[in-house]
Length: 408
Image (cartoon, rainbow, N blue to C red):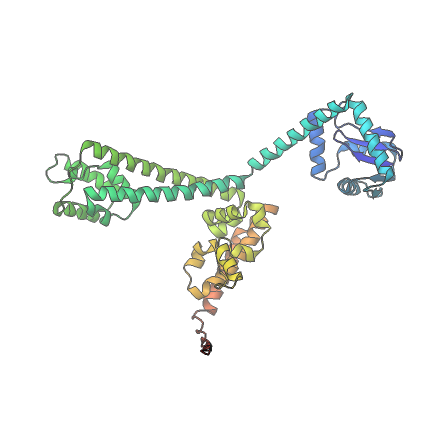
């Protein structure tokens, strides 16, 4: 006897392709929702109730099928059932012809069956696309990409704003290094002549300046520079455009802060172990580089160590330069702050712990971040003590002299 899984449910046939019994998913007539539910169970390698009921009713102890997946599912449910998987042959051809005729009778015409099958597969594909879109690591990838794009755009606008306002009051750019404070001063104060001794509203704007900077010494430096400087007079139109650009920059700063907060919450919910070791930014960059948390969890530690340094790696494989010791992990405080001769060893240790953290986050969802963090700290301290001094420089061998060609 044969058991064939169709789109509407399991069918039992004899060797000649005659249908002995069958079960439709859910009801007597094929229903789209019930059929989709049954197919999803098979994809998860679960045995639908229709298969169990059909085998028990027919009291079968030996069966043939054309699918390894169905055989595996049935073996997990019926331990004593003997299953043979057949891939080709005249018997299988007869059985498949019998299934074809059965489906044609069930739907009335073969065209109606094809229409139902297409609708089912389209709906299953939509469900899978929804599941992929709802995966949090996809949101993480988009969030970290947006943060980096915002940072680049903000820095570019700030460079132009500093250069533009430098025409009006060049000393301010030398005194204020913080981009956000500089943009706030341009937006709140506008024309620097409001801070001059001749201005009627000088006290009001000086108080604003003190609120922005929070440091009276810096405010005094700005006022002193304004007295010795010769600020360029600007029109109301010039001031309006300067303030509008400064407002745009401040809005971009605030948006980036909101995205960073969102990314941190998303990382802590999705992969808390990875976030504990690498932080939300580095962890998100690793996820984006590999294409998702699952892909990162399947990577070995040696690959995680050099993620982001692919150009240097392939250049070294071609014999041009030394292999890289770190990629994205270089921005981690443990690696970045370490002496150059310790960075490779610390990056290797960090990558091994991150590989464990990613696997636990994806597969078991258990939190072991504190334990991994303590192990990482202990290993980093061991590296610092063991390799406290830089290695001795290797003796460079003199290059062999090229023999001069004999002149003719």
